[in-house]
Length: 523
Ligand code: SF4
Ligand SMILES: [Zn+2]
Image 1: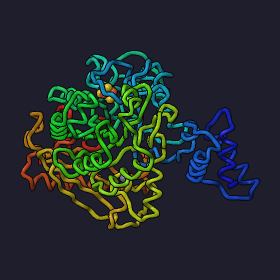
Image 2: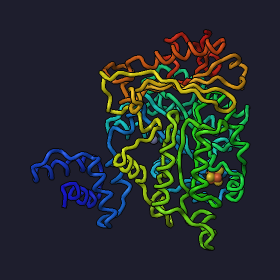
Image 3: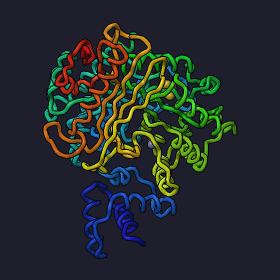
Image 4: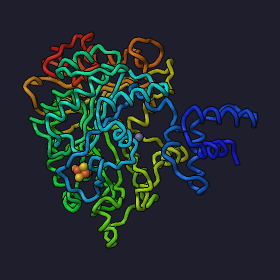
């Protein structure tokens, strides 16, 4: 037995699994066997091997502890997920689980849900609990990317939405103190602009048929900067048979409205739906990347997981539905990864559903992404998506960087994707998404080019500190200059940035001023 396997087996026998215990086991085994310190990535590998050989059982807590500490903040920000309370959803999607005590589509044992239940779904408590946990494992928390998850955001009552967002801002502003009372949303947002911990972006999840101009105005007032659209399929026959309740035309319209207002878009896609098959699914992703009607900025690939709690289970029992096997899923996702464009970020592959819930199929394998990564290394190819190329701790201050420009048509407008990368485009340091919209969705955006995203990658550095990592090398500033130049060439009169509340100060220094909910500069 290898030393890694011994550590994992010893760790799996602990009742209280935390990082301290793992570290002390690592030290004592290393000493006993006169070996150097073992990396968590090696342990993770041993853990998966032991599960495959059925020598230990899968355990979510072990997986959480083993995850390499830095990963969560390597993109330069920390993610704080907050769950909305259980509430009905207008959808009747046949694959969607409904469980008492959890919002539709979520299961009580999913880590984020378990945390929300502990906080009685109160956003204030969820946010502070998460910040505390992130700090306890050594993450800087001064740049927070807030992700609001739960069923369909736009279906919740408006006063609940406002209260929810206010509570999130207040929680971040107050941390580590716990204060009573409430303030107006604008006041809380203003306070956050200069707070120690800043909310640099907010994401919500919603359905394409809930997006119209009014909803967009509202999202902007709340400070939302990114929308995750439950698109699931681009085929109307598949959408219909799965009872999604919307069609692809609505997705196309929502995509255009959101992009023209500067919002970033993530598509949640669901291969293996009833009525589809691997070839049809692959063609769907080809369309997403090449058809200007789609071209999302981010992608979550959540193959349909067969759950007893969803109506699809009945259909499966009648032998009318078959989940893809692990092999089929790996083949499909590998093919997708091989054609992914430079401007897209694959956020996640396979949802974090406890495997005991999944009846059968490849979605039971939670480490498919890692398996594909390993295969890619062996076969010597690399996924070109943003996530796979982000510089992370590979940062080399001497590396020569080049400014790349990728132009593409999207939703009747023009997207210009600017990036600083190494010469062979395997290491990405900074990106900017500039849009020349098809038309101004909101009057304030008249004659405007729009910066939808500006991001520099690398280990998060506290706002007050300076050191050698790329966050402070001025790459963002250079990209903004380039964007301004291009906007002028496109005969635009101004640039509008859809800035997260906590990043407004950065744009002020570059000569931008707040107008309604955008940071704007005349050019
Ligand atoms: S819209 Fe989303 S939450 Fe609602 S039923 Fe469909 S999958 Fe479930
Ligand atoms: Zn990738």
